[in-house]
Length: 301
Image (cartoon, rainbow, N blue to C red; front, side, top):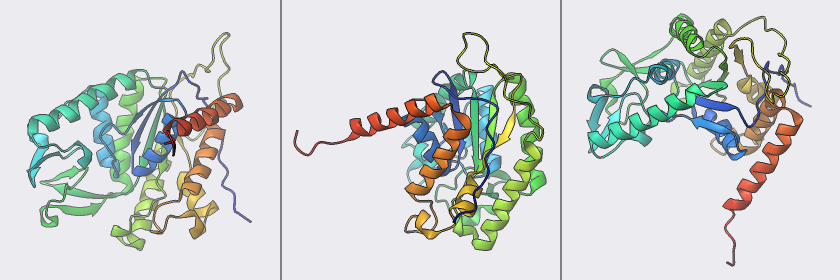
């Protein structure tokens, strides 16, 4: 027996003409990679994996206005140059290489945003680290004494995101935004701290999403995708599906922190059912099978 989480159908329908951008925690990588393997056009975490709402907001604002990373945004540590706004996968041996890696991906994300139909945002934790008064996306293994650690409040997050969403929708009036909260536990915050963090994220998103959604628009004649009247801000309950519906340790990896492949597949299946038509789901399933087949390494060539 399971307590099933009801997931309302989204007021849009993805197809293979749709452009998708996914930003946020490593759980966004899981769903984003499944979308890519299914053949969709996905720009996945152009700043690398980001966890807190402040860093994700900063990344999105840079994408909207194509604000490049400069030398003031870098720090040198352990013979590598790092960006305070990026995951460590963007770190390089020289400052020039680091700037090139960060800014080339930024321009790519800016172009993807111009053609996107869906922006997926996954918050991982409300806890942030501040360096010289500014929130950083990653500490890059610098000594902890250099940082101030604190938990964002609901008001902090809403104050950051409400004007940002208004700016986003002013620039891209038909771009839907779907928020979710990562079900991955951040045990570094302590189990109680993790619960406070997740609750903060959920309460903030509740303030940001549209409450009364209009019905899904009809398709225009000869069009594959319904023409939306305006951008909508929505919520997908990935957190609730894993924590409330799949509340069993068999749905977790051996570390008891990360959802297992089976759990992610359940969330992925539910996501498909509320964002895709049956025909698109069938094509996505076929494309993923073909991708796995192509990645298969034969035992005897």
